[in-house]
Image 1 (cartoon, one colour):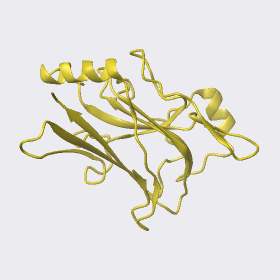
Image 2 (cartoon, helix red, strand yellow):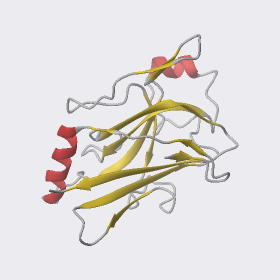
Image 3 (spheres, helix red, strand yellow):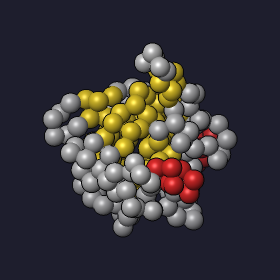
Image 4 (tube, helix red, strand yellow):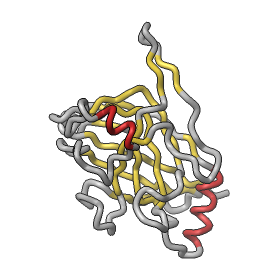
Length: 194
């Protein structure tokens, strides 16, 4: 669920697509205590939908195959690992697990909060754009504003930030984040055994 925590307004709800190869590999790696086999980042992008001149929206298919899969057009990411120094606020960007005894499932809830000044237009670490795109957007990049229509969860990459594997891909109608608002994403994954 994507919402404005100040107003309580829900901006978007839906279900995601799981990348089966990367997810199963992450589970196996996590069970063996392998480093980097945990959810570390939430990525935002703006290349998953096309709005026609008549206002009709068509959606691309989720990228859920191939180890190197990524969002259609990743533009920004937020570190949600509470123990990572790159997480700007561990109380607003975190992962929690809930389980009810006697059931064969558990829920992992990932919270990412974009504050009023997120993303910062001059940030070169968390803004994921190539030089060509950056030059095209140079006159329109505004701190605290972005439009996104896709979100993905990634593991922590062995070589550092923005190098992990895509685990999920959620595609939806374009959502606009303005500089006078905060946006919070509550992303829940249910893991079921049996």
